[in-house]
Length: 251
Image (cartoon, rainbow, N blue to C red; front, side, top):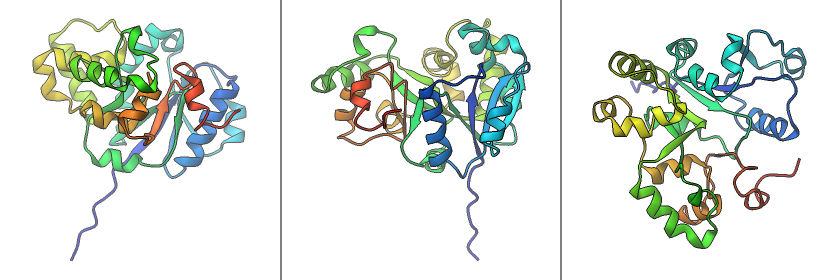
C-alpha cells in the first residue's frame, strides 16, 4: 500500500497596522486571495483595531491580535517578529508565509517551496544602495555582489518554518544579547556570521532564493533567472516600478 505524503500545513500571515488600505495594498491583497486561495489567510493586527469592513468583504480571512505597541513603528514591528510568542501563535502550522501588502504573488508554488524544507526563504538583497536599482545590463555586477557578500533574505515576503524559528530564537536568546536590528538580518546575515547559529537555520543558496522572490534590482535579477519570474516579488513600487509595470496590472 502506497502511503500518501501529507502536504505541509502553511498559512499566509499578513501584518496590518491600519484600517485604511491604499490602492496598491488592496491590489496586493486581492492577488494574494486569488492566487493562494487554498491556504488560510490570517491578518496579524493590533489589539485595538477591528477590521469590520475587511471581515465583511473577505469573510475567509481570520485574525490574530497582538499588543498595540508592536505596531507603532519599524522597531516595534521588529520586536514582534523576533518574539517567540509570535511564532507560538502559529504553532498549528508547519510554515507561515509572511506576506506584507507591498508583495505580489504570480503563481501558486507555496506547497512546493515548503517541500524544499528550508527554514527561511526570502528575496536576496544587500544593504548597499549601489545595488538597489541596477539595470538589466548590470546583471553580472549584481550576481557577483550577491555571491561575494553576506546577503539579507528580506522578511517582507518570506517563508518561515515555525518550529525552526522557535528553536533558533530560544538558542539565540540564551547565548546572545537582545537583537536590536532589522528582524530579517537576524535570520540571514547574522545566522551565517555567528557560526554556531548557522547550524540551526537551513537557508537556500542565493540563486535559488531568487526563484522565490525578487526585490532589489529586479531588472538585473530577471536576466540572472533567464527571464523567469519568481513565485512572488516584494516592494515592487519601491524598486524599479517601471520594470514591474509589464507584469503587474495598473491599479
